Length: 411
Image 1 (tube, helix red, strand yellow):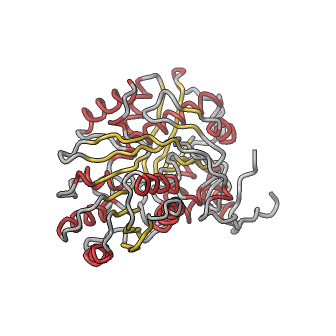
Image 2 (spheres, rainbow, N blue to C red; image 1 turned 180 degrees about the vertical axis):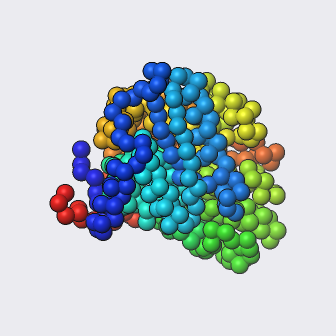
Image 3 (cartoon, rainbow, N blue to C red; image 1 turned 45 degrees about the horizontal axis):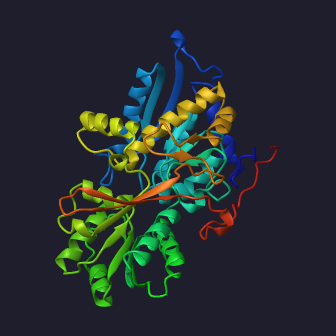
């Protein structure tokens, strides 16, 4: 196995390693606890409803449901959550360091590109197995923010926007596209990916490119720019709240064109922040539980709705599945030793048995497909196509730079 990468500041890596050794749990080597039950210890680093303006409940709800289901299957599961912002890197670094000191089997977090990219190198400097709920290009295994001990649940952001471009230009036959990108790494990545595919269609190009903050509440300027450019469709890589503002203000200003986006567009709809124009929304998501017809997915959706009162989305299902993949890794490793867990997790093939489908590739990307669907006027979903997600060599990922890291002295 390739040696784990270390950040340039050796003292930070040393301090974090020392914290792990000092953790109260200690490194376990047996997989069973009192009463002969198999044991699993997971810490999640994410917010839930009420902890910030953009906090969502799905990560934590999916985790609690997985904990309960594994418990019913005979596991002794310890689950803790440390609130970590979806936009503030320092909050995520602090959450990770706290988790590291407690020495869990797995950590789940880094919920957006904006926090993954700066915090990822610090995670990679340790041996704590970490499953992330965002997938920036920089987070691939050999990327500047990736590592042997980091796996991304979701297909790369590039994959999502490449498929959006293929559908927008090839099927919808859009010619003049407006692009709206959030002012994090996610926005430019989406545009680069879209343009890389759109150039294969001579009559399809971005004619107006706009940006917005993660908490934008007024997009009149951007909407009018699209209207003046005469766009026949809009693609956006964004956060949920601005997506709702975008769709509503497009309607208010008489811009009735298709809007295409990733999972955040669905989150905006589910939050009831979109007031009209549902039949013009196209979403590419990496896990859509209520559109999956397997027995496992149907049971998950039914049980989840009964327990929490709303339809689960990608975040609910992926964290739920992550717990089960972590349990499988513990069982396969026969140990709670992190090196053994890393080896077991890297060999993950969870294409059957989960709510969604996963197979780890050489980039440490677990998600193996994206799903395209549209909304009907009544708010129901119509499945259009499932695209397989293929391994992309790091050299072909435009936003990935070589890691600038060195090993601490004496290692």
